[in-house]
Amino acid sequence: QITLKESGPTLVKPTQTLTLTCTFSGFSLSTNKMGVGWIRQPPGKALEWLALIFWDDDKRYSPSLKSRLTITKDTSKNQVVLTMTNMDPVDTGTYYCARTTYSGSFFFDSWGQGTLVTVSS
Amino acid sequence: NFMLTQPHSVSESPEKTVTISCTHSSGSIATNYVQWYQQRPGSAPTTVIYQDNQRPSGVPDRFSGSIDSSSNSASLTISGLKTEDEADYYCQSFDVNHLWVFGGGTKLTVL
Image (cartoon, rainbow over all chains, first blue to last red; front, side, top):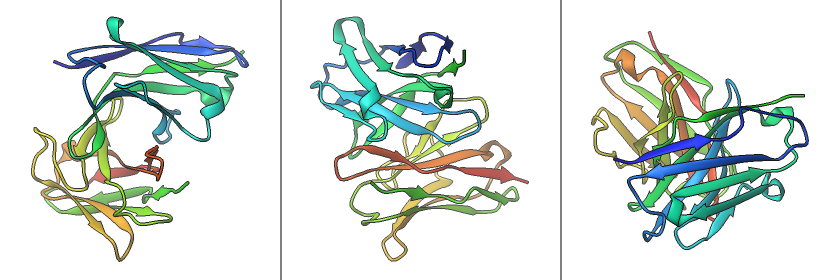
């Protein structure tokens, strides 16, 4: 059974750095063509892809947020960490991590439950 | 970069068929595969279509996906609508650098 769970602060202040951890089970990020990504969703708004890291440490970032994001993995701990600098109230929303693997195409086939992050002073 | 444009909302009656479009703003919709995700209220998204028209195991065959190069768009069609299909639906594809792009989402109401 594949599970993913996001963890991190529920409240951050403007200008602070957000660090979120995705802890997963049921698969290994050292497996060929495996990846874990982060997606966020402001309240009542659409999904927005943020970043993704692949089994070979290839990293992809949303162009609009690239300067603020860093994604890393710890294969031994089955964790992926996302850091986002200089947080702003517009960054408030639910942050999801999700697994991707190749089956003719990459797609997010398993998602975490999401974690709500509020940016406020 | 490009955008994927979806209608804000659609509605239809139970047992009917509804189609949700996803229009690629530039380049060809056929260049990279399109996925569709369903998000019920208060829940995380789940995949209903990947690789343009493939269904993950467990997704009923009432869900189908297609690509239309003439309109440069992808479509998600749900037949035999059920009240449980009421959800937000998002299309997703990739840009030339294999970066992920989501559409703006469509709210499906089953009246």
